[in-house]
Length: 290
Length: 290
Image (tube, rainbow over all chains, first blue to last red; front, side):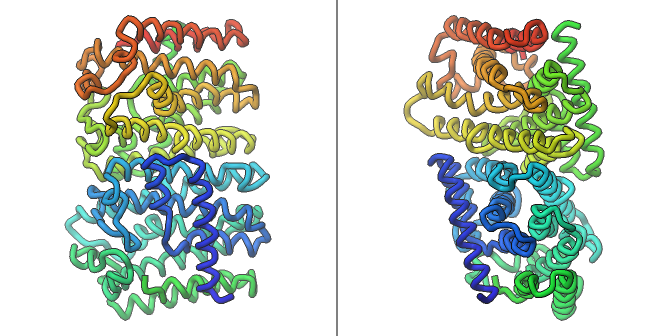
């Protein structure tokens, strides 16, 4: 099975499991909004969890729990990011954002509950029989998602928007390491945590992959097609925001992304051919058109 | 030491520990806002954790972690509840709400990060050496805070505001059980969970105490003094919302609150005189003026 087929199959599995989990929560608008927000998307983070788990011999029936957890956390961050007081986006994945389809209060609450759900999914006994693993997954997820990870990146991003001078390359790299890198890191490491194995190779892989992903995002913001991407493009340049493209130039950004992909793949050499799919995933993040 | 002194001392201990934890996160506005939002308040939930832990022989140095966790979760819920798209409150605990002091984006993010922090605090090894306990605390906290607990109650509350007919007594009781009851329940049970003891007596205690607390809130919304409470009063009656007072009458509401306090105290008989402070806490929730 090629990478794209594997990713699509993982996305279906994750989608089904999330739908099953959410069906347990009743039919209130907030729960509907949670399901709506958690549907669709590339499921790249969930795929990293499933692949990282597979190469460590973890059963898919267990790996699906952290895979859904990280997608719930990712979905929460998108719902809140899209709010009028944040990025004020009307479209996401080609559909109206949650606050446009329902209202802002529903979007705030649905995002809140998706975050909570993420922690519930890793802490529940179905995720792993060993409580040491469940507690470790919950703790590392909190560190990745909170004010020393993703929220730190978002806060740095907000501070940058209000600052007079654009960010330097080091600053934007630090911002990205939190904003998107932290969840990628957790995703790639989760399988090793479930096997109580060394996470270091996957930490290095994810660091390079996350940065390549963000550079690709900046490239897509310039070269991408809004209809294909299902969201607005050209927003960063329009706001005079520093991006990897504005700092490195388009060619420089593309070269940097490619060398990061090589770096990401090299980190996985310890796993041999088992890591082929994760290497394909790294190549995918800079070739994607959405 | 009387109950009020004990509560004040617990509040100081919790305050200090939260300040210490947050000092680790840097000085960005979002982190400042987290500290601002997590400061002050009665700390009743944290007190329940500390007392529930004490009667189970858990060291204060461990109990402080779930006590701070529940206060972080409670603070997150207040910051998001106060947002313009939710209750649109300008004042909280006598101070401007987070979105008034900073802005809405900071309030959304600070609330998000406070929720994450709550899970970090119970999942970290300092909280308890036994991972079974840490995973159990994280899972039960997620169930109490999420779409089958607190967020469910908030969602029912939102649905009620949009409905044509006011809620019945059963409906408002179910709403409250989620909205405020779930976190009270977790707080009271946490110590028993840390000792891997039976949580049932504390579950019953917290169910009655939470309901008494909400009835007292509805009474204060009618009889309370805005200056003393540090927030707006008379909001529910002004919106024609069903409350325990509108449904039971003022005298009926007061009688119901008193019988719930008796019920709460009776649930603790198994702990003998050790549970005196928790019984005082139950009496406090219906006698408080703020």
